[in-house]
Amino acid sequence: MSESSSPTQSEHEEQAGGEERVQPGELTFVEHLEELRKRLFIVVLTVVIGTGVCYAFIDEIVGVLELPAGELDFIYISPPELFVTYVRVAVIAGLVVASPVVLFQLWRFVEPALEKRERRYLLFALLMGIVFFVVGAAFAYTTVLPIAIDFFAVRLASEGILPTFSIAYYIGFVTSTLLAFGIVFQLPLFVLLLASLGLVTPAFLRKYRKIVVLAIVLLSAFLTPPDVISQLLLAGPIMLLYEFSVLITVVITRKKLKAAQ
Image (cartoon, rainbow, N blue to C red):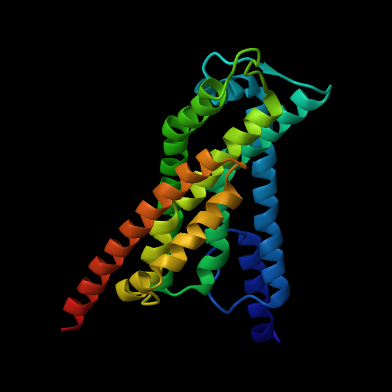
C-alpha cells in the first residue's frame, strides 16, 4: 500500500509546483485543458492590464498616431465616437504591449509537444516575427502613411473643400495600415521556415510567381483601406519581399545540398 500511494503523492507535489516543466505525454486530456485555461487566463489578464495602462496614456498614443497627418484638423461627428475610438486604440495598443507575454504563454503551452528541432524553429519564428512586424509597421508609419495622407489631404483638395477628417475614420485608416504592413512583412520569415522544413524550393516559388502576384494584389485590396494608393504602397513591398524570399530559399537549398554531399 505504501508503494502504491507514493506515486500519487508525487503527482500532487508536481501539480502543486505549478510552473515545473511538463514533459511530453504526461498530461491527460483534462490536464491539457487545465493547462490551456491557465495560459488563457494569464493572456487575458495581461491584455486587460495592458489596455488599462494604455488608456491612461491615450492622449500621448493618439498624438503619435496623429503625427503623420501634420497640421490637419480632426472632428468627431457623434457623441460616443471619440470615446469609442480611444477605447479601440487602447485595446490595440494593449495587445501590442502584451504580445511578448502572449507569445511566451503560447511557447510554454506547445513546447512540451515539440521535438528539439521544432522548438528551435518555433522560438526563432516567434522572436523574428516580432522583429519583422515592428519593421513593417515602422515602414508604414514613416513612409507609407505620410505619402497616402499627403495625396488625400493635399493633392486631392480643391477650392472650397476643406480636408477635415473624422478622428474615428483617420485612426481606423492608420491602425489598419500599420497592422497590414506588420503582417505582410512576415512573408520572408514564413518562406524561410517552409524552406528549412523542405516544403518549398526556389523552382516552386518561380513557377507560381504569376499566381503569387495576383494573390498579392488581392491581399493588398483586402488588408488596406479601400483606396488604390494604399493598395499599391502595400503590394509593391510585398512583391519585393517575395523576391527576397526566393533568394532565401536559394541560399538554404544550396546549404542543404552541400551538407548532403
